[in-house]
View 1 (spheres, one colour):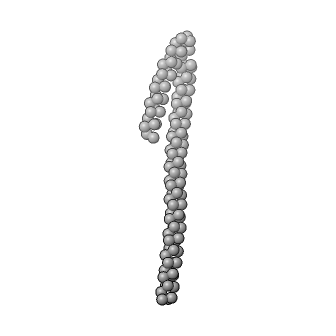
View 2 (cartoon, helix red, strand yellow):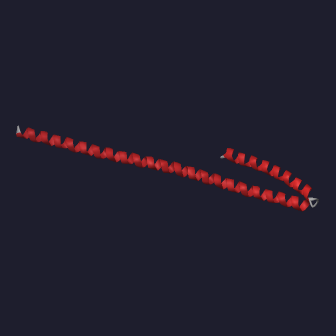
View 3 (cartoon, helix red, strand yellow):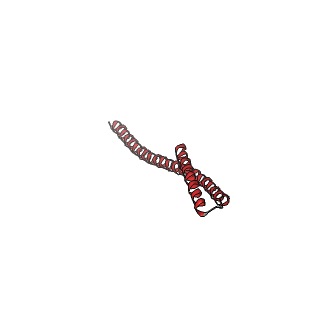
Length: 114
């Protein structure tokens, strides 16, 4: 009977150690899940920042192009029309309206392209 008790104690000890091992594994899994979630969040944030940077770059390029066109328009209006100030102002207003309309279309196109 002493031999039976020893075997039973050994089995209980083995069971206890397996439960402890299971608890340790569960804790490690929870930590791993947490790290995976953090990594997923970092990836989402990185993708968002990358997308924003890409859009900012496109927007910056668009603004540079628009500024160049506005400079060309201003140059053309001030150089080509040397009449009275009223005529020049009227032409500049028309030119600005066209440029502004074109600019809004370009911005809208840029935003829909993504």
